[in-house]
Length: 309
Image (tube, rainbow, N blue to C red; front, side):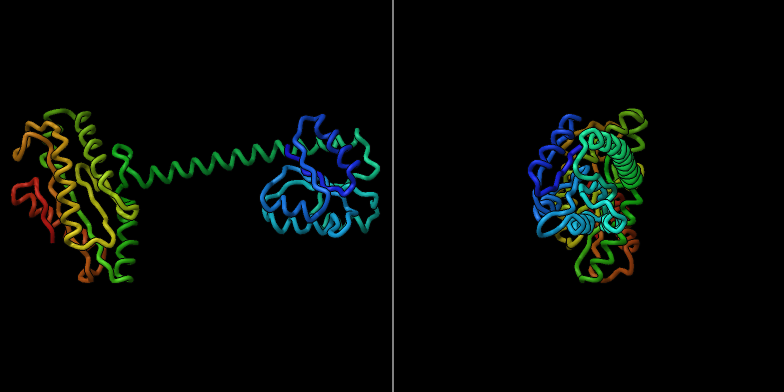
């Protein structure tokens, strides 16, 4: 444990520290309530041994201030004092203290008190670890619910939520927002020719290109379903969306992934359809529908090309 000793008497601090160090704990010394508060603002000890009768800010006032500063970050505070009457005891507990040790200090009783505090410390550490494990599990579950396991791209749910948010933002700020739909050309034939395992590898390789194309933190690449992918590009006009889409299409073609069943090339290619919101659509779904229509035209015109609404 990290134990903070607050006492204006150096001899008391040394006595308490010796008992605590013998049990293998770390000790920090402060000789006033003001110094203790300065330390507490930047640090969280596991236990405080607090003198009550100190010049300036006494132990009760210091404890009350510490509890205000740390809020829910609780740790035990034990008062060291000659005043053990009911009124003093009541005042100390109400100020935020947890136990009393009467001066003069008995080294044996002090060590036994520290041993008792170790039980609380160990319980708190187990609880903290359990909370961290729970948070990590929740983060993992959230990631699984929002990202595609095979490709690592955002999934359909992520796309829908982001599209709704970005569309409302674009509408409110009167800025453009682009949506691109991409489809790997003749992917069913690719799967039939090379097998599903190789098909999954193709999807993963293409996804790396799509993910790498997102230079801005607000851009989002998603696996829309099967061999279909999408981009949400906030604050991107038609020209910017077209340039972006062409770069993505060319980058996928540059992979030169062999595709003997393709009717447009000897390697895997991408057809892309795009649409830009500039105030004319009522919802993000309408923008997506326009991008899907553009993708259909790209396929109709021979695939391995970009078409925009």
